[in-house]
Length: 88
Image 1 (cartoon, rainbow, N blue to C red):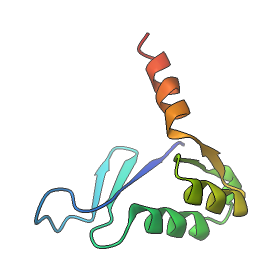
Image 2 (image 1 turned 90 degrees about the vertical axis):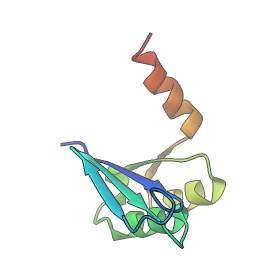
Image 3 (image 1 turned 30 degrees about the horizontal axis):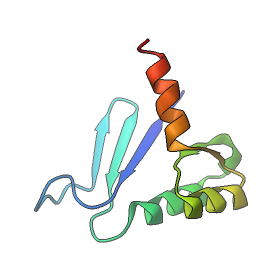
Image 4 (image 1 turned 45 degrees about the vertical axis):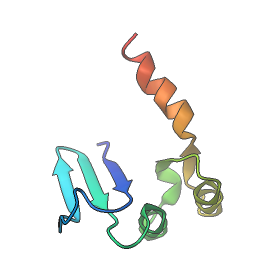
């Protein structure tokens, strides 16, 4: 049962009050006045078993944070290559 959580900096659109969206198993969070990094860290910390999740990010701070909590990390560039492989 795979779920995907996506965290974006800022708002969905200018003036939007939407904080969360959901498309099937994809859950999207807009950070508004905080950073997406803040919410990624909250999410990782809140997991009972962070080692069971994979965070996609090339941000060094996020990568180190995830390593501290034993969450798996995949660089964005590597993830993009993996996704592209499905369309070849």
